[in-house]
Length: 253
Image: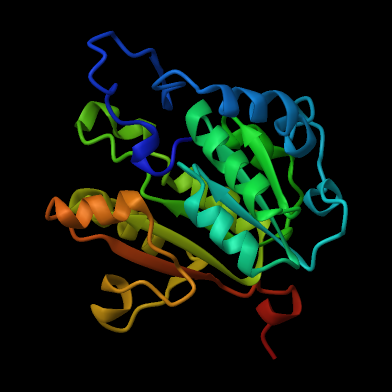
């Protein structure tokens, strides 16, 4: 599940074919020595290994200090947003999933430079991790600038799908916030159509200004800035996990 598309762009003028899979290419330009060191020395300390199929994982137990709450970012790209949130919310444990090796290395650099101890990384597909997490364990989730897979025959590869939203609805506590950003107009409509069809979520927007402008606690990234320079207007979509209905609430009286 790949997030910000600076982690799945074309090869940088190499002229060589890029190996791709369902999630996009695994690695771009060759890693520098410093990045290779981080992958060897720091990644083992913060890496998450999902349990075997059918197993469960308490995300709060992944951290040395049990966090006040746990957030999840699916496809963190270069890790700019995740590191910003981790630095400003030291009491929150943030789990990030990213397929792109260069993106993982970039986040590791920020973890080291900022001294962050509240970040854990899944290098790979977020879905096995999400399948292993218990219900009501996430206070916030992010899917920022995912690959829109614009060709119709590739739409099945889009991360924002009914199945993903349904799983997130199970994992998120009542009142939790789901944040999704896209600079693709078609994908924006796709996202809103599926979110509107899910009774577990409500869209936190009363007017265009509510999705055209980033909230103060939502930092800009290089990908977003490039999208704006290229004439694409990002949409910043926020959804609230509705309160679950209790058995008594469904009874007449």
